[in-house]
Amino acid sequence: MNEQVLYQQALQILRDHGYKLTEARKQVLDILMSHAEHLTSSDILALTVKSDANIGRASVFRALDLFTDLGIIRPIYHESQSPHYVVFESNGHHAHLVCRECDKVVDLDECHLGELLDGFAAEHKFSLSGHLLELFGVCEDCSLHK
Amino acid sequence: MNEQVLYQQALQILRDHGYKLTEARKQVLDILMSHAEHLTSSDILALTVKSDANIGRASVFRALDLFTDLGIIRPIYHESQSPHYVVFESNGHHAHLVCRECDKVVDLDECHLGELLDGFAAEHKFSLSGHLLELFGVCEDCSLHK
DNA sequence: TCTCTAATTGATACTAAGTATCAATTAGAG
DNA sequence: CTCTAATTGATACTTAGTATCAATTAGAGA
Ligand SMILES: [Mn+2]
Ligand SMILES: [Mn+2]
Ligand SMILES: [Zn+2]
Ligand SMILES: [Zn+2]
Image 1 (spheres, protein in one colour):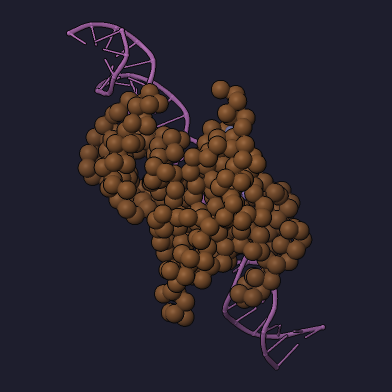
Image 2 (tube, protein in one colour):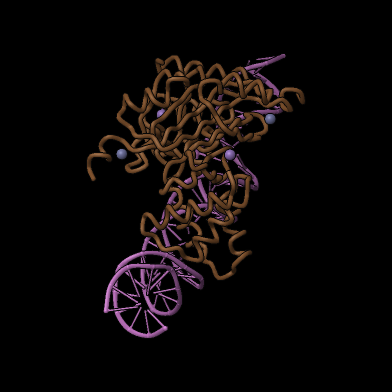
């Protein structure tokens, strides 16, 4: 999906939840959306400071936490490094092939769960050994208690 | 699956890769296997020291890294806490329902990807908004280069 | 069972990711 | 334009995780 569209959608999510569209948040969003790679918080911090030296480190971490809470991004954890951030498509999908040897991460677009395991693995010449699937949503308790 | 079996399987994986079955590793493994919850590294460190005060902090972290490399466990990242560790079944499966409001995590046994999205969500009264699927294996390059 | 050594360990000091605090600034409602 | 609650940047701090290194040990081989 177009990064400009994702960026606008994210701004809308912030507005919808009553958060202010501050310079720091826009800068961090912009960096997240304009990098296809999975950036670490340190990467993001460095890039943000580089593009606007006035932005403080705490605000960058605060933005990442906020975007994560809002489901715009998600930290993932590969190796023992610090977390990398993944931008969700607006359909909330994100699928990876992760190599256990070299930690290469291949993004899978348009995942259709049914055919996934065999189909994508074959397509990318991966030999699979396992998977972790996380479904995000709202539980019954939380739906009721508000 | 039986925790005793998982424990023995893990020991076998260590042996198969030529790692020594040291007291520190066995203690950490034991704690991982005997707790169904998702423990953080701090939890695991505290429990290990509690059950054997001779074990050093570095060895606990080293064991977690090693087990992760070997695919026995996997760190997951919810909220901005430090990572929690997940023990993989021997089939390499692990699936969660994660509530975006309260961060509750529900384990899904026996996931069959096809029916998952709708079936499990309905069963657990979750309203889904997205998912992250990670397939682990070995990429073509790594298969060839060794 | 004993020997030998590479692998591993625990203790310790260190690094750096992430957080708490707080006075100063600002988005944006009215 | 005014006003104020939300947010910020600077800074100090906490703490998860790591690097180092001399001491110990698992377990292969004799
Ligand atoms: Mn990705
Ligand atoms: Mn689980
Ligand atoms: Zn690879
Ligand atoms: Zn909930």
